[in-house]
Length: 130
Image (cartoon, rainbow, N blue to C red):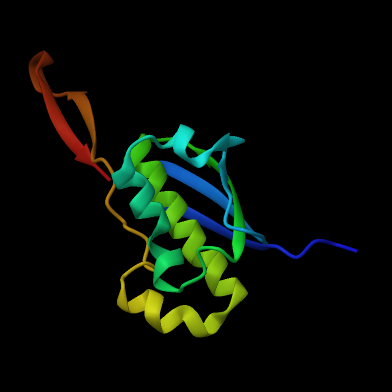
């Protein structure tokens, strides 16, 4: 018999998180490490817990996360987004509360790329690309 699990992909800046929610006691593993070990900063742990506390599902699921790219803040945002999407897969009735808290929408802000391009007479100019 297959184990029940709910999946959500979250993204923030250049980070991507694959989140699996499985029925359990509330244990969180990020890249096979303990939650407190991977994120020693309490603020980032609070950001990650937001969707679970809002929907009162903190102790209903064990959470397994594979996260890649970016820094700690971007990874925390990506995990929060992935947990939100997985909760929607679990129960679509949670959508209204998550939407009002602004957790469903992906944060589109990314670093603006700049290119140093040669122009007339060997001068260079910085161009902004998106």
